[in-house]
Amino acid sequence: MNNTLIEAFLFSILPIAELRGGIPYAIFNDIHPLTAYIVCVVANILVFPIVYFFLEVIHPIFLKNSFYKNLFDKIVIRTRNKLGLKIKKYGFWAIMIFVMIPLPVTGVYTGTLASWLFDIPKKRSFLSIVLGVIISGLIMTGISLFGSEVIKDLFIKNL
Image (cartoon, rainbow, N blue to C red; front, side, top):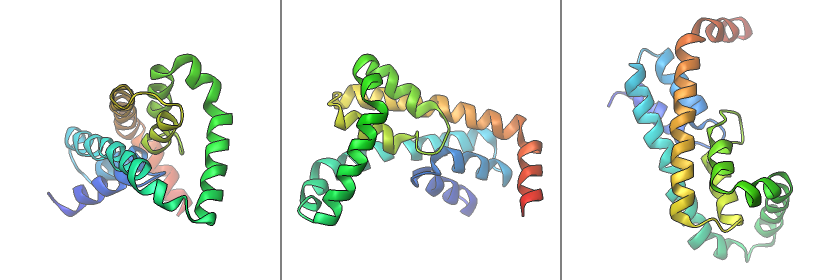
């Protein structure tokens, strides 16, 4: 694996960037679109078990720290207020659509947290998130390929 592909893989694991950063980065650096898609989608899917491990094993330990507890409580309240009714009503589909939308704060990290907060079974949650990542990856690959000149112009003019 070359450095650009490794960097795209890492972008796809990072919060906020996820696929929205990894796929365009790889494609704009001359990685074949199919390779970029596969590597970045796999990397982004790996976020699910990482977040679940944190929530099930490390989170209870961190809750003993008041700063962490207060910060986490604020995130939980915001997530429940923002997504609560939709998650309760649509569950699986709401998580999938939420993850599939390639905008900041709508990826695997938040989708996994929402699934966990609203007690969606882990296997069902994983499937909805994987489908959301696959679709989001297709969207980002399409945008990177077909909107690449527009995006490149925006980036170059803003530098």
